[in-house]
Image (cartoon, rainbow, N blue to C red; front, side, top):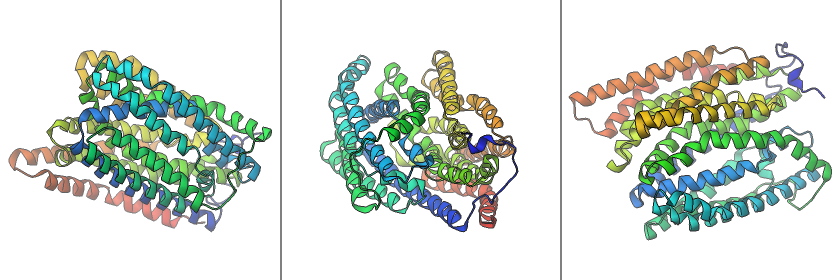
Length: 498
């Protein structure tokens, strides 16, 4: 059966874009919950990160970056797209389908935990050849695997909520569990000064989220069920999702895997902090696309809307939000690092603008990921991520030879920009041809970001301004530069007819 988006890439609009006032309210509410929830979560996570930097040591962040990379790699290797499948499937509300999906989720979690534990010793030995402290991974990885196994038992309603854009309770569950886990992590870190505090905090977060998901979310009871038709549908949809997510893992995480083998763990720990700060906006945009935009596109396609019209109505506000945050990252990086971290993390302020620029291009490309998925083209996502991986591998070693660690960081920053032509070529095939917003926002983002950075450095050369006041000045300059764009985007959203 032909997918709705394949009818006509240039097709005329047949129904209102949102379709009904109820759907529009769901979109706005979902966006609000996602943005506010993410903002609160990242604010607390950032504060905890600063506290951990004072309590622990740079190598601890490198070790946890390795663990996170390994676990996310296996998670993507076994990812068959349950969430997207439930969102787009015509059986997404069928109790038998959902029970089977929950059974698959639990089985996947068990397999994933075993795979992760099996890798503990080989991974520790591999990185210990470069830094003996990596032997700590033998104990840390199994603790993290326990959290993965617990997390696999969370209610399937965590996934169906995204299908209906009912994200309020899900956001509260995620915030409560994360805040509890962070609290436990900080207490353990304060008492032990051990990297195990991070792993223990993750286990507590998984346990609280799993328990609350069953206690709070209404819907189909989570029971073991194995319906052959449902399994076949899940596997059929997931075959390209597996390829796409696995390639995405290597494309996005290979930097930490390689850096930890080539450079010292202390250097990689500083880089990991800069990377996590730079990626916060990308994570927000990814959360919005996954929990709001992709479900919205799926519902709109079901109503007969063309994908081009749907994307054009949502793209500009999301890009303006991303441009504002990334410009802030470029402009405020050095001042923020000077204020929040001690001198051992000073180089993070140098890396952050580079990584922030790369994250902007990643978000521009990510704008089209939801469209490709809604159009039933996950292989395009896989090809784009594969191109990023190839570009990174080609450029990395010459860059290290030329510029050492800084050269390697620059490669991370430019690879997403270099893969964009491939993404845009695929976008044109489904009628997404208008690239004006991406073009002028890219120019505006860099002009404002570099301009504010230059002004702040000029001020620092003539006056001894404390980092906190410099940060305030930089924040105000960027906000004033983007205020007209944000206001216009808000008016455009408000004026959309239902």
